[in-house]
Structures are given as C-alpha cells and as structure tokens.
Image (tube, rainbow, N blue to C red; front, side, top):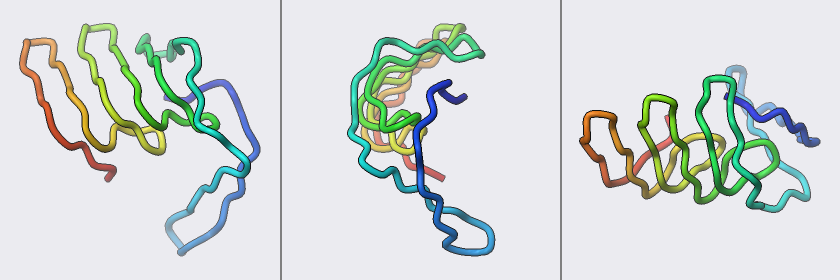
Length: 95
C-alpha cells in the first residue's frame, strides 16, 4: 500500500540489513481521502508519501482503524473495528 505521490528523501544506511528514512523539510499535512489499489481508503495526515499522524483507514470488507499512524503503519493509540463486530481499543506498535 503506497501513495502515488513521491517526495525527495534521504536514505541513510544504519546497518547491513536496515535503512533509516528521514524526510527533509517535510511537514505533516491532511489530504483528501486516498484510495489504495486494494480498495482501502485512508483519510488523515501524511508526512511525505507515508501515513503519519491521526487517520482513519477503511477496508472494502468494512474493517476500520481509527488512530495514530507512524511510517505508514498503525502505531500508538487507536481502535480497530473488526468485521465481526469485535473492537480492539488500545496501543498499536510498529514491528
């Protein structure tokens, strides 16, 4: 799942197996809803071409996440609404 928008980034090697991406002169911004090729729709804040800040993503099957995002992943406080009606309300962490 990626946005079609591209922005300049500096990629710095921090080990043999991982990279750290730092956005230069980027500010978090709210944009109109974005529909991914999977049919999922995200509405919220972006940092460059990554979901970052507060946002809501809804999947075609009706599942929904409302909460904090970091580096294009759910991270921080949020709620995930499962299709079967279950709700997870808590902390999400990057892996």
